[in-house]
Length: 516
Image 1 (spheres, rainbow, N blue to C red):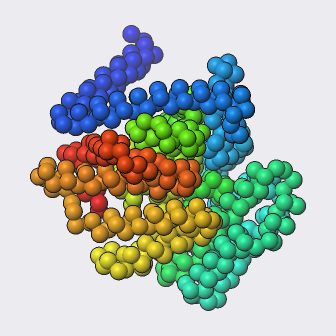
Image 2: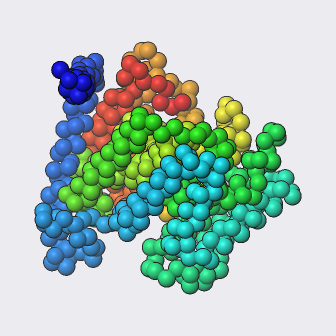
Image 3: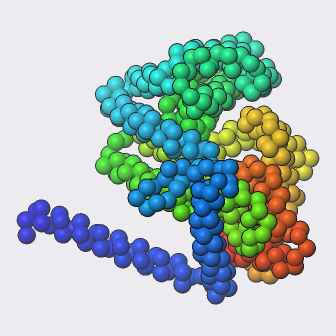
């Protein structure tokens, strides 16, 4: 055989072996399940399939009602070849992946190309080139005045941190900047005059300024705390500008704290590295395809806003709608933050870059459900861990949780819906801390007790996050339909489904403490 034929044969052999290994792993994963966990899995999957079918037919009815003018809501154009309308009730997905899709792809592709060539041929000015490329996109999208606003933010935080060397002063400046962003009329007057487009880019400007504030605050805190010999090199004003004008995180997030930014490694663009990039791109495209399919065939967001259906629909479908809407929110974060984090990690060498959220289908505690891992790391590093210290004192832990959610509320905008969402999640997190002494032991009876508690806890997670996603009224009606309408059947079904889900996770031989 020729060398080329040998190589082709080896590739086919590796491909066959890979497929065989995957099938063996899949078969082993199912056979390793205990009989009890198989029952839970079959029951959950059956419920999910029945719920999807029910929601599909309800989606068809919604489209018919829209055509007849019986509903005020609208659906997008969707896929004309399949005669399917798109569910556009979810604002964030429409904002990021419909209105700004082409701009996001073009900006990230350009950043990858520039970073690749700069890391190979222009290493000393790599960060400067990245910053200049980001400034080009910021100017194109938001105008030159917005760039001056960002630079003024950087200059203010730099001067305050350098002169005062006080964390308190930096906190005052941070809170003031956030409050001005939400309440001051200055931005409402200045930004629209510099952004000659629709409200989409105006929303993008507010989101970007929020991220800029957190990055400047992170730089100030790290500058005050750092006493190393490299402080002069790492904390110059030019480094603060490079840190802020880093395109993968400028518009889209998540927030990368400054200690992670300066702890970079020079990327190595090997074949394996490029292969990893293609793998992550393929995963992202698959995620987008799944979400797009759901938005066209199963209108979970619109159905969840149909309060009449949420009152009268089967209890298992109502529960699945709660799960599906929170899962959709998780998938948005996974796609968007996964893309930017992978670019930062694989292309630019930030190995500690914020990762995507933990899968909602594998967790049942409030501590794991914050989808923006960048914000989670930020508040833990600068609020939750310093106040809670070793997280062993109930009083300090409660104060740390309250302060954390107060700040998150201010940053996201202190509307009534956000305040209710933050309050409920803070109570849930505090409740989990009090239950920290209840841990799954080897005794399966104790694990089942924990599964019962975590099953109810998981319904609280879905309901509390529904407040922020679909509104207080949807969450209230859903809770009433499942637990408080006087129907023993509905209550039993909800408790059993929650228990099956939590028990499937908790009874795993490798499961860790779910209340840790």
